[in-house]
Image (cartoon, rainbow, N blue to C red; front, side, top):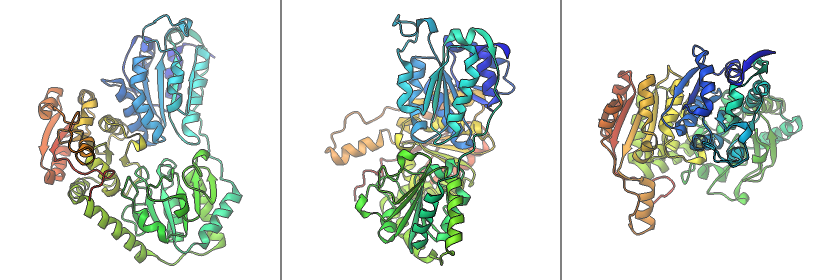
Length: 539
């Protein structure tokens, strides 16, 4: 046991767990932690944001891009509540984010005295958007609590966790042992379930696979490809699963999102469906319309939730797919090529896209042409971002980041900054709407201060575009509350010390190439008309 303060125990245990960056804002209840981190500044980079919302978004971007735990730290009350949007996004997208939250003094907890930043039962606030949360009140408990947080973050389904430490506990001296980092291996999937799944898939003549975010999280891209090639299965992904199979692979059909679903072409002829790390939420099909489903997921509660499952396999996607492939090889032989048939599905899906959103597709193709396969695109809640879910080709895992079903306005830019901190050698681009960008425009200051050279593409249509489209086509053009009075974005960029640029819709690719040469944070403004989103299709 070593004598140390609670703040030192926290900082040293985070370092022991491999943390190299913390996204944070200061405040009285966590200043002891800041002081302890000063001594570790060569090991842990402290990135001070300009709003607590950005702390968890940046931690989420760091986690999604690197596969490591992203860490944020805030004061209690308003700081913690400001951080909930980013934590909710991490929860929706199964991202390993640790939020360290301050608290009021431990001897005032539960007394409703009106202490600074007091929120009674703050732990309860976070329960719906965390996998696990906990409060420590003794110095000696801190290393074990941090270690448990990392166990929760790196086992099973990796959703965010929250750990609270009162200021008096951070300041107090006590005896504590720093715990060595630990790798928690995933268990093999149930052998009988693997056997039954292999039998279902081996019998199929036209199998299909849909891969979700779980296949990316587990690093199962190689295993997914091998199973798909063995079965000659047509492959689709969700928005979070993009890159699980390279877009240019012969078996790849497309991405299911909103009302644009390649599954409509595949499923009517499919006689077995393998779902990997996905909620299996299809808009166009009822439970009576689907073939036998083999569902692999780390979260047992997802299996059979939205569609009936023939065989459920609870486990890590990478391990389960490897087991499944071994069993398939033992009981059957590789299927004959279906590449021509699957090319027909792919062409039909691409025709759908071109018919619905040809203007958006041209912009997305221009963006794609400016980026390498291992560059990172963060797709925001804006029209080009929505259509990128289905039209932006992704060949490498962890290079396409989204907010999943949470659909958070304002997340794209700070998430991109976190991704850039985690992967400094990759080019990172955020697709932002003018409405959403204003939620976190102050993080231009963070980018300039720390030299976080991500590019924010701000599509400016002077409106909350999807909502205005809704008013246009559902509410008789009774416009209210959807138009925007925007600043001069180039002047704002200049004021923050960021490079500002403008481009026409048909010149975004060239503008991005120029932005990358700036070797600086860049705001690239693109004026666009309001366009149809993929979830409010008008033909």
